[in-house]
Amino acid sequence: MADIPIEPRANACWRPPLTVDSMSDGNDTAVHDVHAADAADERFLVRNPRQLRQLLRSLIDQRSLINAHIDGRDRSFPTALLELDEDDDTLLLDGSPQEASNRAAEQADHLLCFAQLERVLVRFRLQALQRVDNDGHVAFRAPLPDELVHLQRREMYRLETPVTDSPQLLIPAGESRAEALSMRVVDISGGGLAVAVPTDCAVFSLQKRYPAMLSLPDGPDLEIELVVCNLLPQRQPNGIEIKRVGMRFDILPRGADSAIQRYIFRIDRQRKARRNGEL
Image (cartoon, rainbow, N blue to C red; front, side, top):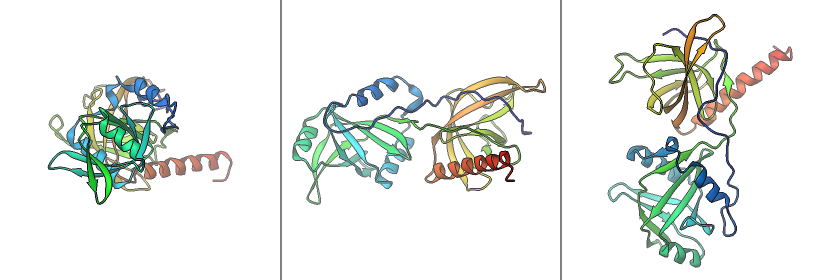
């Protein structure tokens, strides 16, 4: 498929960030505000068992700090995921240095857990906690959550990519496609990307997830998963009708976020240098 340049841009489905700065004991209403803001938003819910386990394992591998809110209320304690048991479908959660918090967690109906994974908010609920001994330290074992919220929260700078130095997106062949589909990425941010396709292209559907390969001009090939957020018809200056497909990153491999930002910064620096007559 030939590359189709595109001029205008439209907003994709990721949203401006909400801020959760305080997650300790006290009057922390931000937690409830965040929960209410996206509780009904199906776009950010991860229910697929494989994807859910992958995100939880990433929290373990990156030793991400977790704020566990007792019964989803203001009282919380810092903790971390220690282990994911595939055989029993359970998680091992580190206990608190404060025994009062451990007793409250043991008696709680659930813990509402907040963490960040590569600056993206992750939220999940743990129920049926059992207090256990972990090499002389308090820990809690709980069944895997049924769902997890993976919510984009970053303030994004969206880069319209240059035609001669743009990333390429490869959608592999699948049940509905006999051949792989290769496209130029027309804009990109830390939260997602967009491609332009002919109006009769029927490959993409709203809210559908697509495994893909993202090739950066100055970086590695990244195996990613994307979710389609919008399909917008647009008319180019030459009168040709196209369809812009906006997608958010659903799964990124480790280090992908940094690689994408490096590309964005490089192109931005080059453009500023040209405007200043330095190139």
